[in-house]
Length: 173
Ligand code: OFO
Image (tube, rainbow, N blue to C red; front, side):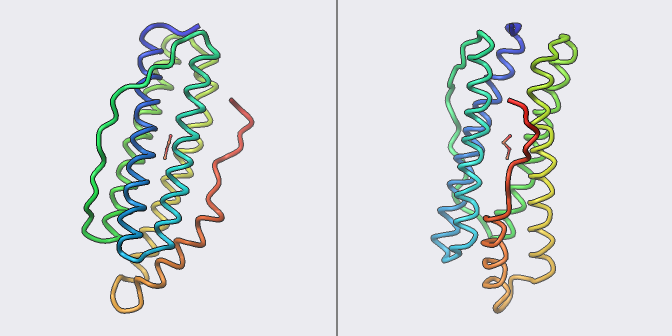
């Protein structure tokens, strides 16, 4: 059973996961437009992951007797200064999402809603992985640089991460 407040917070998070998916899909379009096929594939697969995050929340709300509600989703930005800008904005967005997940966990704890608190632990672990992943990409960009063939090598390195970036398997939800 979810309180009205908990339900509203979970529905807001559903909306935010949709926005994340659209943001990363839009970024994948920008990367492809710039000939960065590795980065485009990576961001597209990350957009798919965000839709899985959304569906996981959507199912949880409905399984718990609540009504999952889909709201209006803001249009994401579509112009970026560079591939470094894409990944910097991605990291900043993930830090923002981590804050929202932490707030959700806090709310569930304050309400003694331990089922929801337990459900949210998957997201807590996922946010740790996502921030780590995007920080590592920014580190690679700083190391390799964007000059000359640097961009080509970054695109290749990011393409490799598409195959190894998995969501954590905590066995919940
Ligand atoms: Fe990239 O994070 Fe969803 O939750």
